[in-house]
Length: 116
Length: 112
Image 1 (cartoon, chains in turn green, cyan):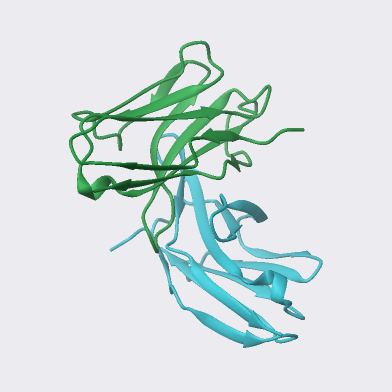
Image 2 (image 1 turned 90 degrees about the horizontal axis):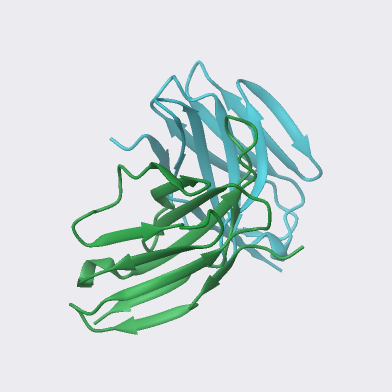
């Protein structure tokens, strides 16, 4: 079974440019998460989807970040415009979304973003 | 104060040593406790999952939770070079919806 797929794996952009990350979760997983991981830190939740509905986006900086999961399958996270402080690893994870409570999250390899 | 505190290390041990990794947490509403392992340039993968206080063993790994002191531990017996990774503790509870809170991770190096 294929795991969580993310692309691109690496991205280098100049500040003020837009950037987008794509995630394809494990087939059949209803819940999708986007996390931000800074160097030497643990992942921090940006947004969580249950199917196509964003059920927790309280930590998403909405002035520059946006996300969508239009058909409840794959998802895109966008930053516009990017700032130097956005340099980090952006992780996508998915879980079955059936338990109504905590579930094992399966992480993708992440997209490593460098803003110059 | 962070909700989950974890010593970032690095921790370097010889092969075969017993490794002890620890975290503390602040919110007594947390009920679920996890340990993730993250290899360099990879995403975290779930290693152990426990609910409430007590011990859970899986092969060379033992997870321990003490809710009275809000202390989480992971023990690795007979450590191997392949165990070299960052170990992230995490907690979760129904604090207005289930949300996983991760520690900063401890970098472990096991020397052959």
